[in-house]
Length: 384
Image 1 (cartoon, rainbow, N blue to C red):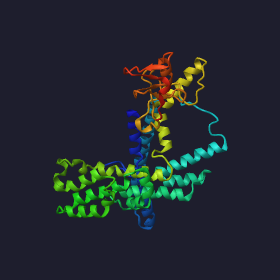
Image 2 (image 1 turned 45 degrees about the vertical axis):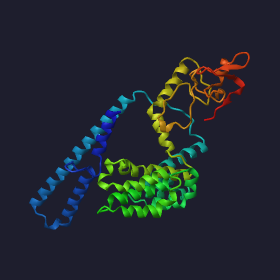
Image 3 (image 1 turned 180 degrees about the horizontal axis):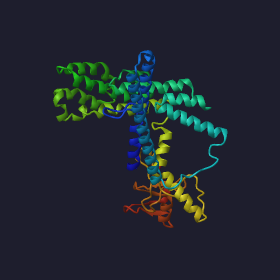
Image 4 (image 1 turned 120 degrees about the vertical axis):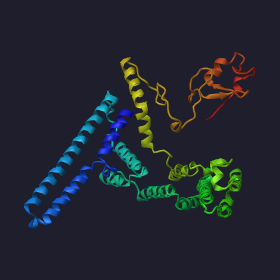
């Protein structure tokens, strides 16, 4: 993917509206300059002499040449990007007809796209999409996503005020989830007060802790004590002290994803954007593996009739593993609804099928991992 991303980066640089210093002006900038020159000449048309006309003609030719050269560069970069895509993905993408032909399916797809645009902060694009499609997203939900990004922007600018206001309004919800969000927001502000006071004055941070952090002492006793004792070190030496983690930027950077997670949870939505998860997993190789398996089964004139599992293993990153998986240490197979994990009296766990195979005619089972024997009927099912 490196070559493909490199060509894409070149194209993005060439088409950027505001190139950096010492860069060739964009096409739109060159056109704007040309139009401004012509409008200026039009205003002074009665006072322009022959020499000025010649200079104007040369300016127009120079601008035209700049635009033509820039356009050629963009065409060349676009062609190279196309070749890189074809080289990286030589096979055509599989097609699955009749997926989004019914009205409910189309409505579900349009709603998913609209919510994706809103959740990723692309509000102008989402507004246009909602106008051109039949998707119906309530205004209240739209305003909530706008509020989310307003608060995230404030957190990015080290302003915890809007996030704290939201956390206080939803304190009961956060407590029901056991979320430390409100405490972490106050912790961030406490550390900022301590590190940025000039001249160093820990009393500002301690006063803030007494006013805002005291209600959290019972649930965060150990961390509360560390916060109050870290002030024995001067701010300049905190990074080299046992409290170095208090000076880490991650203490503040982690607030954004945590707040987004809790905000989406309050709306009944997952932390991750569903459409992005689908694209990441499918584009990360899962779709290609499934399609290859599908083709092999078709060539062998076989069919996979199971709907609750795939015929091949798809490796997923940890953030996309939503269910616990148990693999029997005896059979090396994953547990299923019909073959659940069973825990024997000794505490070791095997799959139900393995337990039945290990059982003797008397119904007793010797654990394959320790000397303990027990009745197979005494084993209990484990739920993850």
